[in-house]
Length: 283
Length: 330
Image 1 (spheres, rainbow over the protein chains, first blue to last red):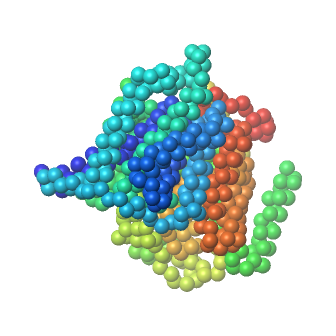
Image 2 (cartoon, each protein chain N blue to C red):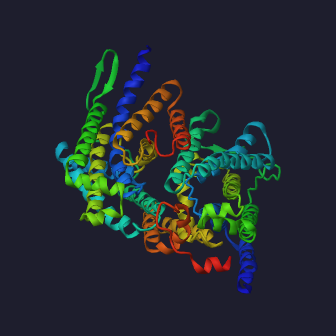
Image 3 (spheres, chains in turn yellow, purple):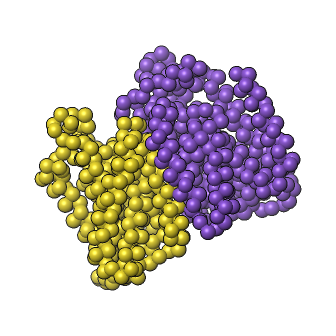
């Protein structure tokens, strides 16, 4: 097999890890609260700026990352309380549009504060060579953490009381109040976890990409597709969908160019929505 | 009704008089307001029935790029190129709309499918950079004043064209309201099965609205391109443009005929006002305020927006109460 094709496939798997991690939090919110945070990738962008600036102030990187995760968890709760909760009862599309306003706000506020410069954190993780294939360590790390994050989330949802309540709410919104579960509290916790996962993704992305106010546009549309393709709230489905999409992009990019491979991925999404509207793995 | 007629007749008259007095800068703003107002109106034609499309950037992009490319490479007059671009957009709307409506891809799924369409068109334009100039954009081959090339260095010509286009858009809106289509769509927004059972061709009506909306958006994009004489994929296609269209229409009010135009007036004035006030010190200030405005609009005017967006989500959420005035008027 062509070594470059193999490298494309390996890199595709690693990109899949990044996308899976990004989609994880969005998928949780999408699945549980039935809200599309269309600004999710821009929340990640904010996290990247936080890591960048804390590191720039001289904080050690792990501390900066931990602080970012906490900050974004709080931000997630804030978004839910300020934007989503007042319109929870209205049509889902309104919530999508309200977070669209947030998207505009975050992107332009970041431009206002930081300008449009591409900022690089300056921490470069090594590139690993393995049998003639070059692999970015940062991507490997993202891949591993996405895996750990997904597994941790899985056990949290399966093994804890709150996790069970979250799954129950996703299944039946109306009955859950009768079971003695505070729906509002569950939504806030879900939003916090979603925010924290955005923070985790931000920590890993900042090692691989330059930060700029519009970086969210690069990932945003992809991760919505992944959530929908995997089936809403289906963590495992989302995980697999992330790898399908990333392989299309990676192998497509090998045979043509980057933009065309994205065109291919988006077209694949549109077609699949018509073939399997409730996700690839829908029963 | 008579007050409305006076407004309808008087408004354009005042605008026309303004056109001969306005200095070029203000004329530039007026043209932009009219063209965007036209495009926002076109979006609202389907948005008000609950089909929230994030794909109008795609239609606008196709409408703008097709005539420009044909003119640059083959010298085809925009008089032919523009209808071709509009037809292609309509076809695109049909190809996306038909399966969506057939398979009941609604609500935020419809929004996400059309969002993907926006990206497909944007990235295709960027990918074909050998022909389209990619992200660097594309300038139409300039020939000075020419009816054949639809190029007028004098802004007054484009002002007149935009004004006519905008009035045309409003006329289409009124025509849709008067015709059977509006009642049909209201009926199926209320209860699709019931509407179908009394012999309404649900699919045809939905597609009609979608195709008209897409075609007009493409037309607006084409004229916008002719006016600016420069196309950039980021300014005429893609998600950013789609969202801009959706939000301006919503802020202005998508269920009244002049709402989207008010949205255009508001957003462009805000943008320009802040640009003049802060010069380039605060890039992004306009959109920061705009973003906050949007969130406030959607959160604090829930009834207005729900009243119209509600029907789309029929079956997935609690159906909002009818708006009595709307139904009685119809």
